[in-house]
Length: 537
Picture 1: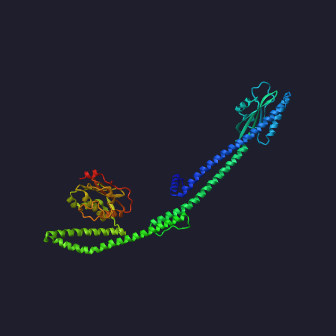
Picture 2: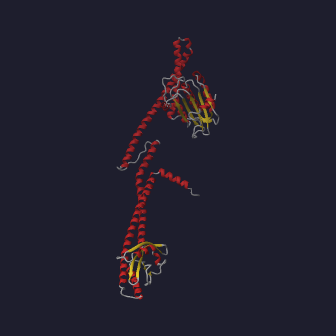
Picture 3: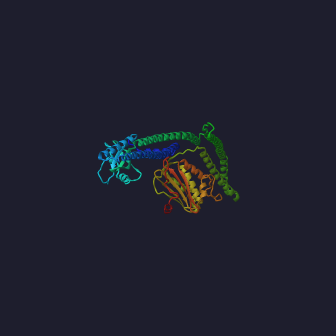
């Protein structure tokens, strides 16, 4: 199986976003590593610099003593003459310097004649043998020029230069120290001492290794301490979050265990107190809601019997109205109208009580929405004609059949058409029908008075009307849009509104084509394209 780095990256990002503990430990480790790295680098550089400086000063002092030793030895030969005495003096000087440097392992010595002097080259140059490369090649020309230029000075000076000394595995750090000495009867010579600083480098490397191991151990310790501390803090928070989720899911008896007297225990006590208070309020409100639902249901059922009697009596009076005086006949007509409205109100109240009690079941079947819309439009055509509004249906074609309960969708549509007729100001009313692969949509568009934004926010509230003083043709109860919203939600759909003062209103119903299927987008805009409705006569 191939390594999928993208999947691992997604998992890492998901873990980073979801875990406070991981983020805290990771950030602490990064910052700790940065801090330990900076401190370790500073300590390493500081110690290395001090170690090199002290070692250099020690070797410079040693070289200065060696220079004095050689010069004194050369001065002692000032009364002697001959090549043998000068050669012996140079050899003795080399041996004495080598013995004086015996406490510094790997010291190389070279006694070289300064270039450009007249007279014979006596004694010959002396240098430590057996080196690769030769000792003389470790001495740079720049250093030789500085040392040669100091010849003849009242007080001898030493000059130094850092170098690398090759070895079998690479190279060692080193230092070349040079000074000028005068050999009577032979001229000026240069004394060079080459010291190997591998011991100092080993000391520094050991220190750096100690710092690295110590820093790594410190970072791991900080990470472990952070993990434990964060776990102690995040654990109660996670427990509180889980308890809050269970409370939100309806488990009102869930509480956080209370242990100790620290701030976490105080949080647990406060949370549990809040949960107790919420539980009491929820139980009280649930009890009141049940009492209210039962009251509405009982009253509605109890009113049906006397209302039926009143309706029958009213129908008898209405049928005999022509034999009554005009005032009595008008009273019979009003009685029949209000009894009908009362029956509609009772039916709506019973429907709302069933929704509140969660006792409504959906019975779906494949339904042709275009035909359903045409039937609904035909049922209100006479009412629209009396108001002077022309009804038009725009159905461009597509997948119109859907699994819905036709009775409820027809009720929604009739409700929306009734409102459009009441507020359409006699202007055309257009019903749009469209669908896509996942949803179907109906939109009722009028060009009447419209609504302000504040009214749109409350248009689906029970018993609410934008203008209570406005005369309604359909005799609505104020529950129509609230029931329509419940019917749409029962189907798993949306009922939305758009309106603007003076431009009319548009209600859009979007339902899934298949029961239980999620809706991605609505097939119709809100409001739909007006040119489509205007061109379709």
